[in-house]
Picture 1 (cartoon, rainbow, N blue to C red):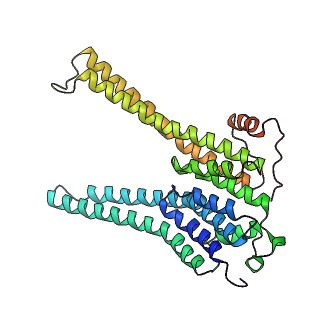
Picture 2 (tube, helix red, strand yellow):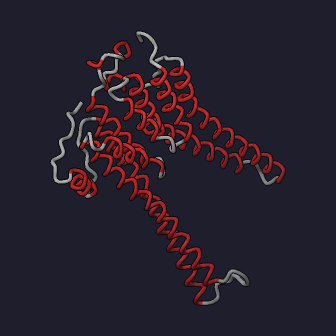
Picture 3 (cartoon, helix red, strand yellow):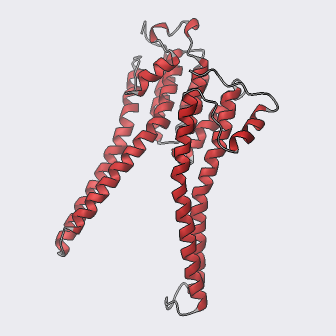
Length: 313
């Protein structure tokens, strides 16, 4: 860079990167920073968009890799405990070891996720131009960000690509339970009047994520309903045997509620995959629409005005 960015630019960049340590709750801060600094500072706007990408797309990759690693560790623990023998002492020792190992793995995974944003914040505080691995350089090319022309108004970031990036990260954030809704909501509130495309994408994403959240909470409600009915019909105290029609009904209700809740929860990953696909298509230049939700959101967002999507990258 030709000279360091000013203090305000660095502050916004630092805040955007550090918000990642909130694990989902801070996803609105990069959008606020980008909305405030776009067409004022390419440096601050780029780093806010980069931080947004790390908290949505980067979080998705980290979550999936962490899930695979945790499954591998739990599988290894199950095999080890199965081979521990019948000795209570050996079984207790193996269980203690794997519990500690599992805890350490979780801490390491959390530390790895928080490491890059902390490094990025330190670099930005010093006025340097940090890039996340893989994503940083790709995003710079996508936005045509040139740090050597940071103060040149003729070299602003590509507006259409900025909007597409923010919209896509809203789609990707579906994997962040509940807090992911902050991304499309913030984009809609702050930039919806300027960009109809971003407004439409944000609204349909918000509705879509809301439905996914309702599925998760609905599954929990169905399970709790069956459990309460089971307790009410079998009795909170006394003989737990199922020797009466009411107790059999309670067991049937519990089993049905557990089955419905399990099937509902199993559907959620498919909605996550569709959200990831939507983000990918938006980045590739498509004017993506969710089934049914997309058409309804388009009519509401456009307010009887034809939506004009930005040019494909």
